[in-house]
Length: 381
Image (cartoon, rainbow, N blue to C red):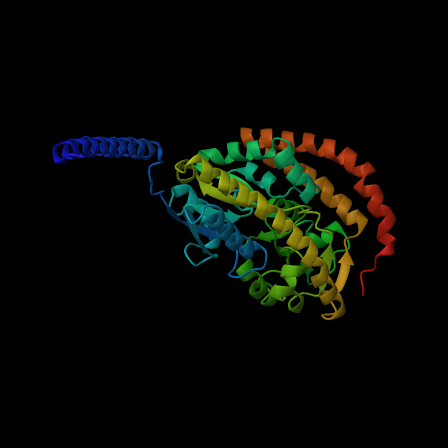
């Protein structure tokens, strides 16, 4: 091939190669631009640092532990987007000021029992315990299968709060007494720590009601500031050492047959969260709600055996005539409290209607079943 023809051919090939390369580069750049336009933008998600105040003493099993557990689960489920620091009673605010602290927005979350706030709104009491009312299973059904939670939210709305059920203690014990209760007259002059509607029943029976947080109960009973107290049940009563300060351990807990605990959130703080975080909080509350009742049912039985067999506690059942008299007084108290505000009237009516429905079913299911199997169990051993 002649030199001139070779250079000409080579020039055409180089030009073609260059054009092809340029085309590939242009195509590659277009593809890369397209990919970049389709890739999601990297967004740094906002994180929240909240505080929770409770009405419970530090490290109190199930009650304060449940609050710690809730905070941990919210942290885990939100991948660290919400972190809640938990403060026991008195560490940040006094126990019975938790409601107001969350309402004011001083902190974002609180935990307690709704009957503590009866002075602010009588209707709150129905969301904790009603004497001779629903047990824990019935309360859960009212909240999640009836209109209980909706009414609870309506009751708390004026206080800038959003409530969530926090689990049940189950049927509580009747309390610790330093004298026997043989008739309704034995309540006259009795100084007893007992909150909620049950406390008002004791007052109507002639007793003097003292409202104390858990951390002050033992000392008050030991020093004679009070003559009797109820707290929760065997698990916590054993831990507080109440058997060392009172002679008789009465049952059943007519005043709190299925006490429900609560978590309450500052409404502005809760509603400022994106929807997914609100749902995470709600899901974690339901999970902890189930955990709380399971813990009480499992551990109260163990603690009761310890109180009876090791601590030699004298377990006493309220006489049927006393329970009958207390029930009459309870009906009067509930009617009086329900008449105080429109929302209390509304809540009580809904509660009573729901109790009739589940009560009819319970009488032919659990009542009949337990009446049959109960003689097979012993209070000892």
